[in-house]
Image (tube, rainbow over all chains, first blue to last red; front, side, top):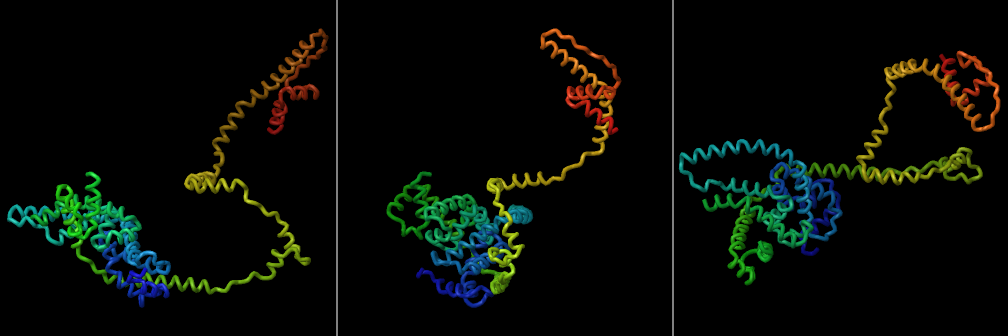
Length: 202
Length: 240
């Protein structure tokens, strides 16, 4: 595939064996580390799982790179491995994370009630949702989507992939990409509209 | 939501901005308030997702990937080491003993080994494997039950059976000879009646208190009529 910018580097990797992170493997790692980590982070929803999923992704990537046949863009293949590793890890650790979220939720509820008490006394601006909180809300809304919808949203908006690229990465038709994206928007709409209204309209 | 609205939304989501919309799309959006609102909200949501900060991969990831590659390197080295192991040839003695019995100087052991009957897998094996693949859990349970230890008869049951036997014994000793004799008499009478001819039979009545007092001929006759009960009763007495 001539338009693939990674072809030469991948061929270099294929001609060697992955003994350590140096040479072409290091270059490949540097080229993809942030993209892989971002996809893993946005799908798993937390840094610890994102790190595990990223490690797994590069492990699979380097172990199987000799089997890559250039029938799709290399980056699509990498994204697919990252997406699958993240979804697998999320499923495996869902029970553990549910337990830890329960613990995390408690102080947040307390903090919220304290803020409301302050609001009664002092006239705070209505747009009290900070940028960081908005980001958290958006990430939480993404995390609540099903893995299929989550993946489409992350690849389309976080990784700025076109419909064709998302279709190639996930191995689904463009029609399916479109319908999943529309469904993801419906779900995000329910989750985010109150938050966004609060943030942007005050 | 009707289909034109749905397909329009799906299509417009994929376009970069409004400037790339067709005239028909533009008209639809101007007329359809629902689609207009939905697309506005979708754009806001998409912008919110796009504006999430990009994270840099943490430093720890390098160390982890290096460790992973180190493991892979070890695996490669092991695979290489195994691949380089020299293949040992079977000793010629084995050839003589097993594979080449047709030679004139084949040893007796080789001839014996070759003469052994080669068993074919029984036909039932195919069905068992089918069942195993079909219902592995059920087959495991069945095997487990089959392997359970057989429990010995408890002493209490043996004791109870002895008590029952002891209770039944006097009855058997008395009733069985009487029943046998009665049966013999009834048979003789029945045979006589069937013949229809008045015959005179000469009976000799002998009173005995035990089967042992019967003449051997009469005793065998009684045993035959009682279906071996008398013989069993006698052997029990002898055993006691």
